[in-house]
Image 1 (tube, rainbow, N blue to C red):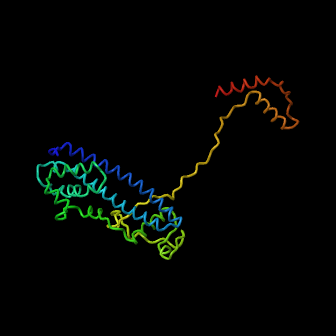
Image 2: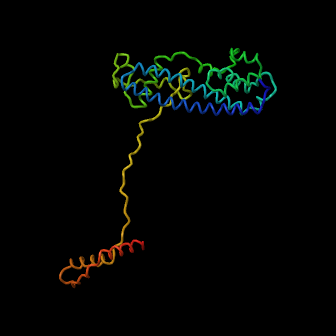
Image 3: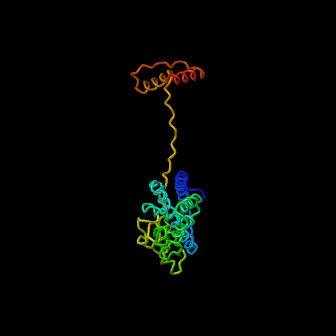
Length: 280
């Protein structure tokens, strides 16, 4: 491994931030599609299959929170890069949590850029410090990162809470009471009150956090087809004369009768109409 290079370390930090953001967007799109599939399964009465998929979604939500934390730590090291660049064998307390969390959690992610950054940090602070971090001696790694890496199976209550929120968001009637009574038909019972499991602080089941579900109830307003309005064409002189004759004829016997002019040729009428259109 080459010696510590400040420029390379800063570039690697920026690359890690970009890749972490891209991966989060990708996982959020996949989670949105998975929630829609779960709502469809519940609607068809396949509750057990939906439960298994919900467990996978919970794990993905926790992993997504881990990526968010690692992104914050990378941004922290970028903001305090002057402290990181100091020639010391142990990181300053201002960046200790970020360095330890990246070294400890990077192997649990699929990001190559983050693992390269981890190797750079391990080389800078030495083998002994790196072993201490990987074993989490002295609890140097953030408790939040440790909780996000916990692979415990989510409880039944949490799975029910996720199912209740997903079915509510997609307008699918479901209740855990109906499922426990052996009813796999959709639409039985009332939804479970799941809000006690969620708060706005985080989305992890360990921290009892909130999940953000897409609102699919908003429908696009249907566009009403409109008939295009044609331009008004002014009447020709001949049409004006005909209109005047009809008006005078309707007034009674006191009005003098005007003899109509001889009919014009069709070609002359078309010529006059086109000339009137050009004047507009």
